[in-house]
Image (cartoon, rainbow, N blue to C red):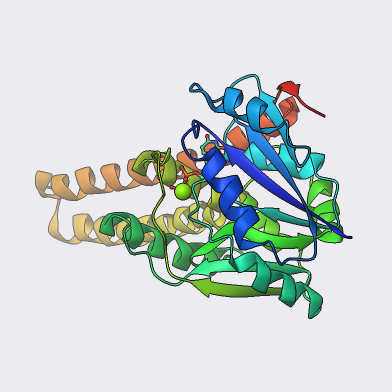
Length: 306
Ligand code: UDP
Ligand code: MG
C-alpha cells in the first residue's frame, strides 16, 4: 500500500492533538493509503510534547520537537524533510483544515494532478479588518510578483513525493511557503471550502504578526518595491528641476522676496521623506541578504522518536 505522510506543525496545542488524530483517522478510513503522522512540536510551552509522547506509542505517529519556537515555516520544513511517503499533506492541527477533503484531494491526485491545494471561499468568523487587509495583500502581491499567490489558499495541500523533493531543493533560509509552493510549478488544482473556526485553543497570530508576515511575502517574492524607490527618486529629480527653473525665472522677473518659504519647506519635507522611504525599502532587502548569508539552520531539533 502507498504511504501518506501527514505533516502537522503544532505550537501549544495540547487540547486538540488527540481530537485531530481521531478525526483524521475517522474521516479518511476509506482512503487506500497507509497514514503516518509527522507532528512537529514548535517549542510548545504547554503539555503538547507530553501528549505527543503518549500518543506516539501508536506506530503511525512520529514527532520531532524543537529546542524553542522557530515558527510555523520552520516546523513545516522539518516535517517535510522528515516525511518518507509517496504522498505528503500539510495540515493545521486545529481542524480548520477539513480532514474529509483528503479523500477528494486524493482523487484529484489520481486524476493526474501533482498538487491539490485548498482555498477558503469565505472568511466567516474572521475579524473584518483582517479579511480586508488580507484581500489587499493578495491584490498587491499578485500585481508586483511573478509568483502567483491564490487568495484564500491554505497551506493545507496534498502533494506528490516529486513536488516535495523539489520544494526541499529550495535552499533559502527565509521561507514564505505560500510562495514556494507556487514557485515550484507542477500541475495544480484547488478545492474550495467554507471557512471553519478552530475547535479549541487559540490562534497564535495577531495583526502585527500577520502584517510582518505579509511584508516578508512581498520582500521574498518581488523586487518591485526596490524599483519603486528608483522611480520615485527619478520623478522627484524631474520635479525639482522644473521647480528650480520656475522659481529661478520668478525671482528674476518679480524680484526676490521671502515669499517662497512655504515651497521650500514643502520640498524639503517631500524629498527628505522620499529618501527615508527609499532607504527603508532598501534596508528591508539588505536585512534579508544579511539573514541569508549567516546560513543559520532554520530550526534545532531537541528530540524525536524516529
Ligand atoms: N503553529 C506553529 N508554530 C507557531 C504558530 C503556529 O507550529 O509559531 C501551528 C499551530 O499549532 C497550527 C498551525 O501552525 O497547527 C496554524 O496556526 P494557527 O491556527 O494559530 O493559525 P491560523 O489558523 O489562525 O492562521
Ligand atoms: Mg488555525
